[in-house]
Image (cartoon, rainbow, N blue to C red; front, side):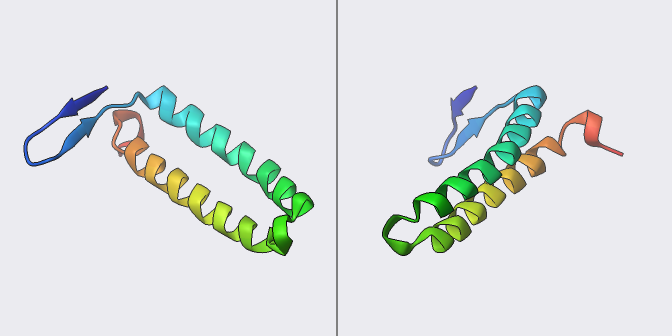
Length: 76
């Protein structure tokens, strides 16, 4: 769900199940991509590419986790 708000803001909605599934899928995909980046080693940048990819995946997973914690099932 996407809704335009005032002041150039956008409201986005995502389901708890979608977040849970996405977090899980990214966690499983990360080691596979790490292996591929090291194996391909494009222009000798494999290790740096892994670091960049992992930082971006970790940021995405952290952001989704913060959203997930707002659902009632994850409240104290």
